[in-house]
Length: 300
Image (cartoon, rainbow, N blue to C red; front, side, top):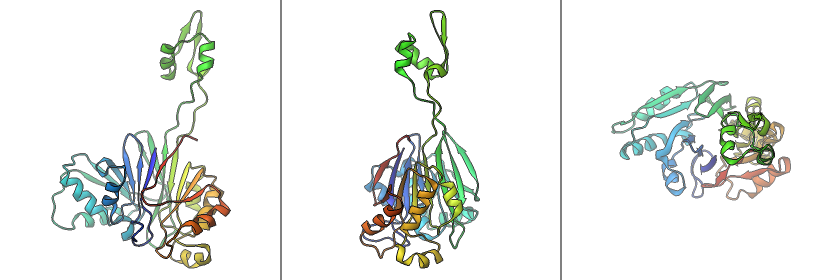
């Protein structure tokens, strides 16, 4: 599982930062969280390919989170895409995406299906699921949790060898089969550890501090939370439906996440170290995301 930050700007792009977009590579498919202006160009600058995007999850329909979608879809058409594309978003998603797809003259050459979601929705997909919560913002907005299915326990090789098993038996046990060794039957649970939770990524989108987002983030492997402003103006930021770096870190601390990445930085902040330092006072596992940063999400 790899997370690539394609855009970390808040409200509008800057010379250093593109508008909001995050690519999550699950190996089996690539999903995109938000698609701000310039997203397809950021793909070309990254190690990810926009032609692999299978699903797009839009947090809300402010321009800096979705205006890259028409250009991305038109470029997919020009590159002869045939695979379907699924787009998910708040309850107004179908209306908004339909409008976007009517922009300009082009022929849509592959299926695009729009899935409006509500807070508390669960989308079960191949090997993972996506859950939603309500974000605190002036327009309908969702936060997302992407979570892998529970994984098998780790195989205990030394224990298996002590029981007289050989390499060819290991695969059968890992597949759930029992293996006979002499007059003894060895079952998978004899050499497998307990099931392990899958890795999880939570993305807040734009939000003031919100209990539903915090609950969605509980025990997540990675939390990506907006940090539009510094602590000294967090009251003003909250009134506009945004959070400070300190408040993002407080969400991470209370939720007990593994790692926090800050994103969606106001253009007033040329340097991100002060925001990062502010967050680390509350939650030491905080880091400010930069455009094109790649992060491998390891098994907890």
